[in-house]
Image 1 (tube, rainbow, N blue to C red):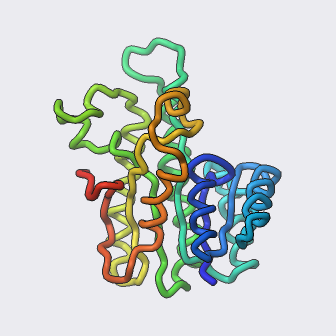
Image 2: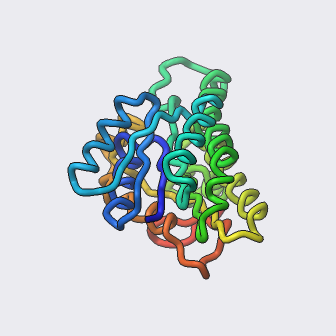
Length: 244
């Protein structure tokens, strides 16, 4: 049985992704910053007949990331799918006025959205290298596309949340670098945009997003189960390729 780990998967898109992977027969490691939340989510999946395990994983804590990797090695001996889903957008609820942006929010956003996936990839790559078909999925967004940010005709052109958008652009660059680094291995690395999803990411998401977490998880699962002949180092959404 292949093993999949999804960061930030006690609720929302992460949980929906874990559930979809469980439905496909993968053993799923559900993670959260506290063990109780991870255990509740894993118990929910187990009650539905899926093979699930709860695990504490705070992507902003090097000690937590290292401990999680050691625990997965102890439990399963390796890993086949890593979904870097954990992400934050604190600018959406920032009530302060700034000339441009808050340095603190930049640091907080990058800690989760960029440094987190890098730390997790570094810690779990030795386990992924044991897999005959390792997959790394970085959950990004078209809002981070430099092409869309600079294109007046893009629906995202008027959106300005610089910490979040630049963090996802940086994550996309990490995807390209990782794909190059792993080009001589069976591991494939991709970025995906799940779309505008009804999650707790921002108040607007909960109120206005057209996609359910279950609908949005479809593209994440597609990326996590790419066939052997698929390209690595790509960026796509439900409709196809997204410009970097």
